Length: 319
Image (tube, rainbow, N blue to C red; front, side):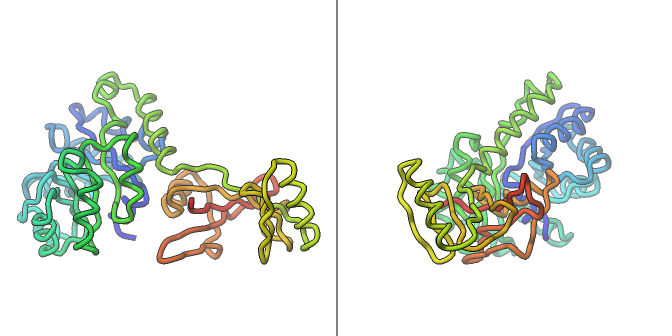
C-alpha cells in the first residue's frame, strides 16, 4: 500500500505549525491517542525540520508529511528529516519534479483546471486543493473532477468538522487537511488532552459508526418468519421476507439458517467501510479478510475476526 493510500484510509490530515520542537512529539501523541496517527508539519516555522526529525525518530508509526514546502531545498531537508510525503500550497514544477525524481509522494496545491493539467503532465494522480472553501469548495472539486477522472483531491483550507463530510462523501476525495483539531492556543498551552478530544470527535464524526441492524439466528424458515412477525408487531414495523432471512423493519434480521455468531450478528453502519476498518485496526481490532464483500470496486461489508458477547460484528456501508 502506498503512502497516499494510507492517507486516504486515515481520511483526515491534521495540519500543524510548531514553534517549539519540544512540542512535536507530545502533540503527535495526542493526535494518535485521538485516532489520527497522522500529521502534516508545515514549514511555516523555523522548528519544522527538527519537529519532523523528532516525530520520525520517536513515533515512526505516524504518517508524517511536510507541509508548506516551497522549494527543493525544503523538500530535501524535510525528507532527510523523516517526512514521507511533501505537501505544498501551490504547484511548483521544480518541487514536483524533485519529488518524482526521488520517489517521494507529493501533493501540490491546485485551484483550477490548468493546475490539474500541469499536475497530470508531471505524472501525478493526486493534488491538494487550496484554499478549498475560498475557491469553491466541494462544488468546484466535483466540477473539476468530471474531465479529470483519474485525479484525486485533498481539500485543505476552510475544511472543518461541520463540512468535512460533504467532501469525504465524494469518492474522488483522497482525504481532507485541516487545523481545527490543533488550535494554536491549545498547542501554546500544551493542552494535549483538548487536542485528543477534538481529534476523537472529528474521527468519530468522519466514520459515522452506528447500529444498523441485529441479526438473529432463528435457525429455520418457520422460526425466522415467526420471530420477524413478533418483532415487527412489537415495534409496529413491517415484515420483509427474503431468500435467506426475514427483516422486521430495518432493525432486526431473522436468519433462516444458523449464520455467523453464536447468537447472531450485529451490523454497524459507517460512511466508509475501508476507512472504518483501518481506524479500528489502529485500535487493535482484527478482521476476517475472507468475509469482505466488494461492489463496484468499493468495500461494502466485512466481519470482525472475533465475536463480542456471542455476536459476530460486521461493518456495513450506509445506504
